[in-house]
Amino acid sequence: MSRKRAANVELQEARAGDRPVLRRLMQLYLYDFAAIEDWDLGADALYGDARRIEGFWRDPRRRSFLVRVDGTLAGFAIIREGAHFAGEGTREISEFFVLRRYRRRGVGEEVARAIFDAFPGRWEVAQTARNVDAQAFWRRVLGRYTHNRCTEEARPDGQGVLQRFDNSAR
Image 1 (cartoon, one colour):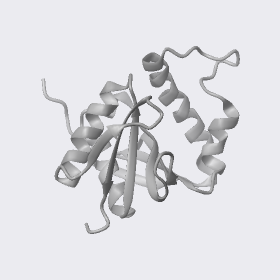
Image 2: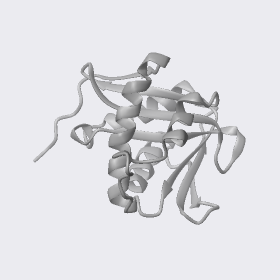
Image 3: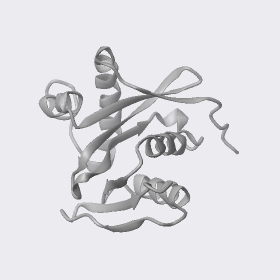
């Protein structure tokens, strides 16, 4: 059974008024992560530390984007200047989420390409050890995007893998 490809994928930078939407999407993202990382739901019926999550919207080094497919909300992406492991001068995909119904339809790859094309330079994309689906996704997407000119290595914290590439010349 083949899946229908997404017709129209839009990436829009989030505004301050979009924070409630981002908070709700973050809970769906963390719900998926909870299944992978074996996290429990908090006493407040939320996943994650609210203060840390709010930091995503307040950190001036981060930029949030909403993803829509055919005008319907389908996910989000957050990038950060100053990658977690590589530091200043390298951007990272901080968080990346596509709703399950839009996965395996090219949405994630189209969003990733749009982000990388909009921000040329050095990039780092990290995944946790247990998130094998994300590892496979990023290997496939980055392999195609960079024509296999990205590197992969163990994360310095020993908690998974990361890929690095530079699209400055693109």
